[in-house]
Length: 212
Ligand SMILES: Nc1ncnc2c1ncn2[C@@H]1O[C@H](COP(=O)(O)OP(=O)(O)OP(=O)(O)O)[C@@H](O)[C@H]1O
Ligand SMILES: [Mg+2]
Image (cartoon, rainbow, N blue to C red; front, side, top):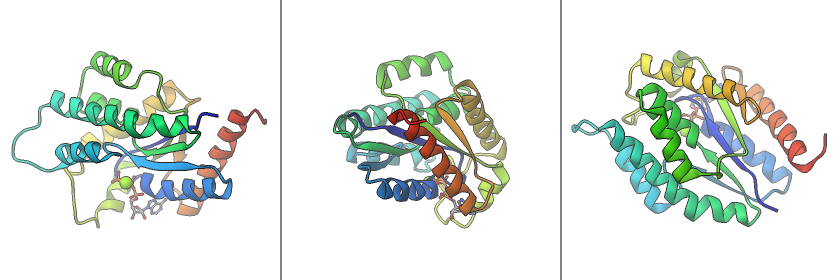
């Protein structure tokens, strides 16, 4: 049977990478084979493209350049890692995926949604996540959580207004597709976030295996 594809989404410091560890534990407990991955990146070439996208640089990065780099990395990631894993019955858990493009390059940068739809159709097609867990947290709290981090990438350095658009953009994606995008209240304690994620995984797995 084909594996399930789950993406983690949310702004900086919302707890995506932390949540991945909770998912890992749940999958181990249920003896489900999986691969963990991330975007941009996930394969050696796609990780090189990630460096190109996120490195702070003096040259202004054209919005369309950024958009195409993200989708170039995604094409590689899908072909070389995600699709082969799913075909083998392995679940794929990705720290960010397509929703981030709509939110960062679309909503926050004001990118053309028609262009995003076309690129999505071309690069991703039907290989959309079966489910997405959206870690939602107020921008200020997310920023507080990452403030200790020494290394700030090009997107971390964007303004508060930019990060607010990111949060709003993700919530709009959830409202538009509530069946796929499950919102997790990431302002809560780590214990609570872990519990919310496990509840969603149980619900999703039951739906996928036909148990009610
Ligand atoms: N619910 C929570 N309560 C308290 N601290 C948290 C919570 N979730 C995450 N943190 C802490 O906040 C920091 C950022 O979390 P994490 O790295 O998981 O976020 P992220 O969404 O992956 O961020 P980025 O987008 O920058 O990769 C970490 O130090 C983590 O331990
Ligand atoms: Mg992270």
